[in-house]
Image (cartoon, rainbow, N blue to C red; front, side):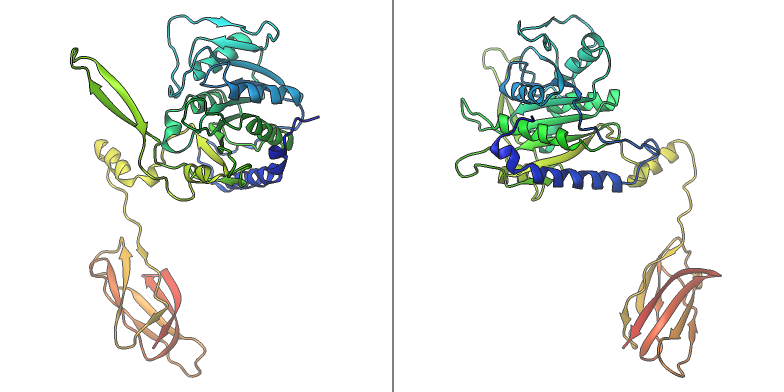
Length: 398
């Protein structure tokens, strides 16, 4: 039987709804050329072969809570995690040198401790521990949240990024918010039960490089259970700030002083919602590239460096206003049409018996033209450049 707690059962239905939303968002996104044609099935609800890692170290309470819950739920789980805390190392890997790998629990041969980073633990597991790729990689649950800009620092996120971006293995990054005082704890068992619930329902399929980043809120007497589950955008604010204090005796030495960031996350983002008591789901992507159409100035620079001519600007006419005054011409914008070119503007009365069609031929001047209306009434207005219809709409003249 799947392992459950009261909190896990309470939000199970909310988790299902959130997963459905996640699937819709992914399905509605227009794929780029590199990802066209991907048709992935969601992970089945049968027991899975799972690789679990983290950045707090193999003995941390968060990863062990998830490991125990997954094993109890019938999954085949292998833990390969750093020997020591590796928080903040992002997706760092070792390109040379040696590492030490041990099985520190004499009673459980499926637990490995490796003297490397979280991403390095994934690399080591896939090459030296597992006979074949697992069905899923879970990174966490992390001791502390991973939201906003700080996902760029996170070793938890780094391990999931390498698993799905480099090896095309489905992955989840999971974190549990905690306090910042000494001895602070988090809702690790409740987070673990949420992970089990997700897998029992069938994890949605995502494209290569994409993975779920899940954050579970800090519980308290005032918040004994999460408010629910929300899909959220990644905040840009960072919870961290850094200063450096120079040593007075050795000026080459600087003490790193960490502090809390002061920038407030935007409303509705993962950091803001998590702080308010919601479980947050965000889909992150290992592919950080931006399509050239979204950065036209960079695309123009590339063409200039190649001595390529700029592509001609397509001729367009903006949408017509819904209403204009008879005595005051309205300006309509254009692009890609040279000054002096004449347009044909045809005014056809709508619903008026005996109304007369009027055709005007204004000149384009400074990327626009004057829309001069006939007598009061409603008209179907058609604007043409030569024989090409540029725009059309119903305009009320008053």
